[in-house]
Structure formats: structure tokens, C-alpha cells
Image 1 (cartoon, one colour):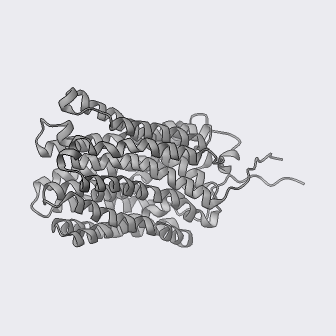
Image 2 (cartoon, one colour):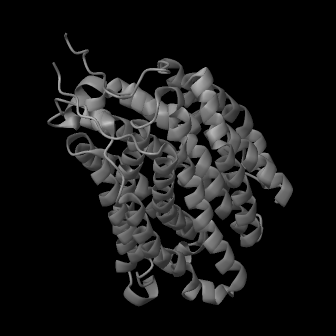
Image 3 (cartoon, one colour):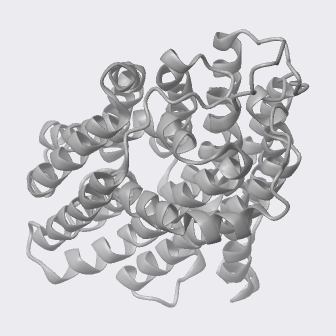
Amino acid sequence: MHDVRTVRAPSMPRLAAASLAGTAIEFYDFFVYGTAAALVLGPLFFPTFSPLAGTLAAFATFGVGFVARPLGSVLFGHIGDRRGRRPVLVASLLLTGGATVAVGCVPTYDSIGVTAPLLLLVLRFLQGLGLGGEWGGAVLLTAEHAPPERRGLWSSFPQIGPAVGFLLANGVMLVLSASLTEAQFAAWGWRVPFWAAGVLAVAGLWLRSSLAESPGFLEIDDHARVPLVEVVRDHWRLVLLTAGALAVGYAIFYAVTTWSLAYATERLGVGRTVMLACIMAAVVVKGSLTPVAALLGDRYGRRPLCLAGCAAAAVWMFPMVALLSTGEPLLMFLGFLGAMLAFITMFAVIAAYLPELYEPRVRCTGAAVGYNLGGVLGGALTPIVATALAEQGGRVPWGVGAYLTGIALLSLGCFALLPETRPVPVAVKAEPAMD
């Protein structure tokens, strides 16, 4: 007989709420940097560059966070597969929150010279390292507690966290932008959202202090000694396919929330407040519809929704950049909304899909590495590439549309090669006891 350890099942609404709050806080930390990079970091930390070069340099430090995320998924994935999902949530939140507060304290280039952008680079790397562990821990803790028939729904709540974090980050920036003068915002206003991360981190730690370890981890009898070695040896093809499949989601999200913000304010002369409002409105709709799309995934499968989202993205990227180039708030919002709907059709089910693809003993490492490598492919490069392409084009940046469409087609091909997983249980199955 096998001695299968059991834990009392927690309230799924409470667990989902705690996971959502934690991911919202960590993604707030990550997104507030992206907004600051689009609006103010270039002239403050790269003043010797031209406006275009300064924006590119700021986006380059933004991209470093994505490069760090796979390393964070390896580090925290090892902890999650060896020691449990719960310790990952605490350690990643402390690291990301501390690095974010520190960004708000870095003196500008005028004060300490080249040391200023170097400090930004290091702190952005630490932000990415922490966030690389956050997603795997939060998603697995929820997915491995959830009943199989509603795993997509409950696992979607951590996926709402990025939308909430984005709205928090940009809401604070919007209020500061609207209430302060340009000089005040550049002098100290942009630092306030980074300092606020400290308060949010304390709140997140309190919320997560009472969470129980997942049964999926407790039921594993033979833990992987070095999870990364097993993932690379036995699941390398799956990791590459999931990374390629998820690239389009990152590309869409950061094209809308980061690149378009810089493009419209610098090239089209659209007000900063107007752009933030248009983007935030689209993200509100995206966050609200996440559970609905997840329920469809529970009913019809993960893969069909992912394929539909990729196809919609491929069709919509050219109309999106055309609507953006008008500079009209309503038309820009419609362009962003279509992109966010395509995005959430895929990403609402990803939190259930990725854990189901990997075996339990290496699930935290495998799912997190695949997820965060997709961020490198789609998120780190998109603001940089899109900025460069838009500079070469006319008023309508068709090159950006072609770039995003190409990523969508790449992801469509990767999803087509992945299997369906619903309704394979996530929890480790124990052998039946012999009478």
C-alpha cells in the first residue's frame, strides 16, 4: 500500500483570491517600470541620447527583466519542485517588491552619471528574477487544489492578476500625470508608484501567510533531484513549443501597453493621460472576460481556444496599428480592445494548460520556464523592435503590424503541435490500495 498524504481542501474562492492578489502585486511591480520607461526614464537616465535612442535604451532596461524571468523560473522552479509551491510565493514576492522600491530611490544620471542606468539595469534584473518564480508558484498552488472539471476557471484567477497589476500601476501614473506639472512628475512624481510597492508587498505577504501547500506536491513520492536537468533532457521539445506558443500573447500585451504608449505620445502628439485611459479601458475588459474564456476552456478544451486566439491576433494586428495611427481615442481603444480579446482567448486557459502538459515532479520548473521563455521571445523584444520599425515607416507603422502578425503565425504553428490536455487531472494519482 502507498501512504498518500492528504491535506484539508481549502476554500477555492479564498485560495483564488489570494493567488490573484499576489500576482496583481508582483505584476504591478513589473508593469510600473514599463510605464515609466515609456514616459520618463529615457530623458532622466539617458539624457545624452537622442529622444529615440533614449526611449530605445529605456526599453532595453525594460527588456532585461524578461531575460531574467527564465532564470528566475529555474531558480524558484527548483525550490517549487523540491520544497513546495508555497515557499516560492513568499520568496518571489520579497525579491520583486524590494527591487521595485529600490528603483524609486535610484538617483538620476545628472546626480551620479552612468551609475544610474547601471543600477536600473541590476534592479530590473532582480524584478524579473522574482517574477519568473511568481507565476509558477501561484498558478500551480491554485491548479493543484482545483477540481479537474473546473480547473480552467479557478486557475484563471492568477491570470487576472496581471490585468489588476497593470491597472494599479497605470492608475497611479494616470493620477500623478493629471495632477502634477511636467516638472514635478519628472522630479519626483514618477517615483511614487515604485515606493508604493513596499506597502503592497507587505499586504501580499500577509495574504499568503496562511495558504496550505498543494496536494499535487504533497503526493509526489520521488522528487526530482535537479528538476532543470530532467526538463531539458525529457521535455525540451515541449518547453520550446510552449515558449513559441506563448510569444504572441506577450507581444500583443506589450505592444498595446508599452510600445503604443511611447509611440502615440512621442510621434502622434497624443496626451499621456488620454493614452493611459485608452489602454486601461481595454485592459479592464480583458480582465473582466478572463473567467468567461476560462469556462469555455473547461467546456471545449484548452487547445481550441488557443488556436482561435492566435488566428484572431494574426487577423487583427494590421487593423490595430491603423486604428492607433489615427490618434483618435475611440478608434485607438477599439484597436486595443480587439487585440486584448485575442490575447485573453489564449491566456485565460494557459494557467490550466501548461501545468497539465508537464509531469508533477518537474511541473513547477517546466511550466514556468516555458511560460517565461515566451516572455523573452514576445515581451522583451517587442517594444524595441516595434519602436525601430515605426521610426522607418510613415504615419501608419505597417512594419509593426507585419512583425506582430508574424509572431501570431509562429505561435499558431506551435499551438497546433501541442496536444489537448482536458480533462487530465493535475493531482498525482495514487495506486489503489490492495485488499
